Amino acid sequence: MNEQGFDSFALSAPVRQALADVGYESPTAVQLATFAPIAEGRDVIVQSRTGSGKTAAFALPVIDRVLKPGKGVQAMVLCPTRELALQVAGEFERLGRHADVGVAPIYGGAGMQGQIAALQGGAKVVVGTPGRVLDHLRRGTLDVSGLRVIVLDEGDEMLSMGFAEELNAILERLPRGRQALIFSATMPDSMARMAARHQREPLTIALSTDTVAPSGIAHHAYFSASGGSVPDLLRVLEIEKPTAALVFCNTKAETESVTRGLQAAGLRAEYLNGDLAQGDRERVLGLLRDEKVDFLVATDVAARGIDVPHLSHVIHCGFPESPEAYVHRSGRTGRAGRTGTAISLIGPHDIGNLYLLRLTYGIRPIERTLPSAAENRSRIEAARVESLVTAAAGAVSEDAVALARRLLTHDDHERAVAWLVDRFVLGERDQAEAPARPATVAPPSNGASSTPAAPSSEDRSRRERPARRPREEPPRRVEVKHGDHGVRDETPGEEVGMTGVELAVGKRDGVRAGEVARLLRDVAGLDRVDVGRIHVRDGLTLASVRSEKVDTVLSALDGVHYNEKPVAARRSPGDEPEAAPAPAAD
Ligand code: AMP
Image (cartoon, rainbow, N blue to C red; front, side, top):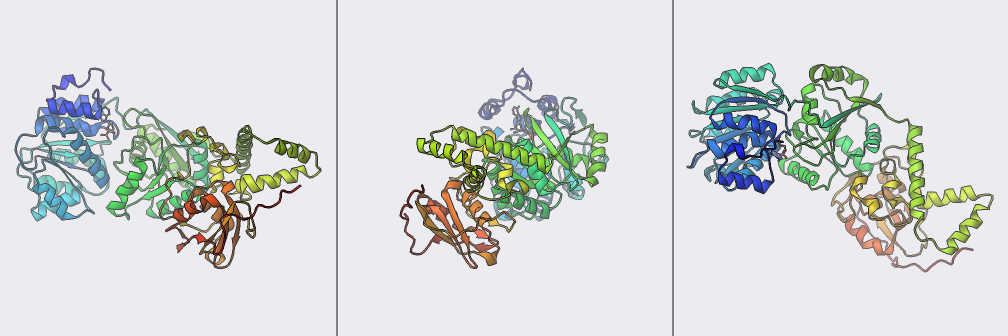
């Protein structure tokens, strides 16, 4: 950022007002370097990474100087993806809100009619993806006869995605005198050839302070024999504790399986890949932006251009083949002067590409080793003990203290305590041996949800993510897949204050008691102490749930599926909300 503010740009009052509205106080390096040449009408070719403020670097001079009064399309920005197109359109709308700048986003996957209406409505700026823009040009629904400036945003990405033909076809159709601005994080030869063909004496601007490997990002690499497996990923998450992360996979199928793995571990994850309809893409991005999802698992294509300021981490679960892709992916964190961390899971086949990254961009991720299963287990145990001790610092009755004292003098005290731990703390057995479980990822220190004591609000603070689903927002539909989660499979009895809930899925659907317990906790938001015995029968499951929580459970499980079968939770027929209190054991 530059200390002298935007004064040197001599901006018009409407743009100054818009800058004040969005809160940009001083120009970034790329904005400072490009404003004057663009305002003077020069063609420029700018090497600038995403996250540097490059959108405003072209939007500000275009809105303030290049656009003239009158109707019709005067500026066009081409972007590699619809997500980026929407983001760029949003920036134009924000910066041009007081300056009569109509903006029309034009991208594939959305209806033509709405876009035609936006174009006919007098939009001055069109922001689109190459395929759809060319489509409109060919159909005659986009009139570019009055076009004054064309911007290629993330030019290298458009070329690497195979849009060269469309870009050439679009550029050929534009008026001769138009200004052409190219923004690109890297400058491959194909980009230089395109510039030579479509620009006039361009000014080349490469920012020494704005290199493709931004300094605000720390790079870590975890080596493992399996590369990007879900258990490894979960162990990495446990170590790095991201607040919010984009997790990159190399294939669509991987995005879906990794997401399922994260969800099964109780984490709030969604996937974003090219198979998703536009509406769904926007929905999951909205969830990430609104912090309702902490992990977005995406392919390169789907994630390009994403600007979510609070992302603390980018995780290369599948290591990318090209160094450019690594830089682009990593640039999704550490945006606008923030710091961020890029983490790579490196398998034996990725070593060559890691080496290439060093050669090309001088990026040397700090090598880290995943803890062994034994180290992991010991850490989790320590965290659980700490959590129990913290929880126990609260009020404890004298009777309980007396009983505990007596218990500890008994020969079988270890076994008795183990039983209590099993019943009230763990709820499921052998958790440390299965890294995909929530307890391994979010050990009890994250909040005392695994202990009988109520967690304090401090315990639940955002610092301690990865977090489970917030209990006030149960998802409407959750797919739960079969997995080995340990079982406590007892017949529900007369438990004090508990009510039976019946689920229409059972053994033949692959149901395990441990998974039902997890469902009740993670989806319905119950604490361990709210869940009693769980009995899995052939075609149905009976679970004891604290009576006050039954309504919450029924509405949270409404629409939820288990192995694709509706869970259809209901109160057990004939079960009274309150069972008669059992006599206290002496
Ligand atoms: P971009 O490189 O265009 O994707 O921008 C990255 C982020 O920087 C976006 O969130 C912008 O809103 C923000 N940004 C752009 N220009 C400025 C500025 N001058 N001051 C503060 N933030 C900015």
